[in-house]
Image (cartoon, rainbow, N blue to C red; front, side, top):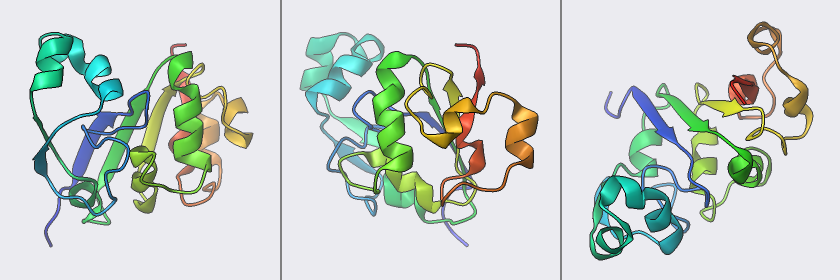
Length: 154
């Protein structure tokens, strides 16, 4: 079998997932890596400040590692207006190494948990505001209908 069965993470303001910065290939493996400035700034509080974040390397679970098991259940979270554009790009623009979060669209059980403000730039999905409606709706493209879980607190 191989691969992981469950992944929980957030999507960064530049589309990074688990320190897979823009440019990380969708077949990337778990590795020690450097981060870009946007990721360093977003993670500075957790890594001991911006200088520590800039000097150090991080371990990341690669996108290929996450997506290897097609039965993996992956949840990404995003909150706030600052994430709206990158959420829209990850869900609706063509999948791209420029937005690593878009790589998870290959997983049939991938889900997003979004605040209303993070979901505000989504097309047809942004008006869905009830979990019951999401569960009853047919899948929207290869990204699950649950991608519009915009019912979390705004």
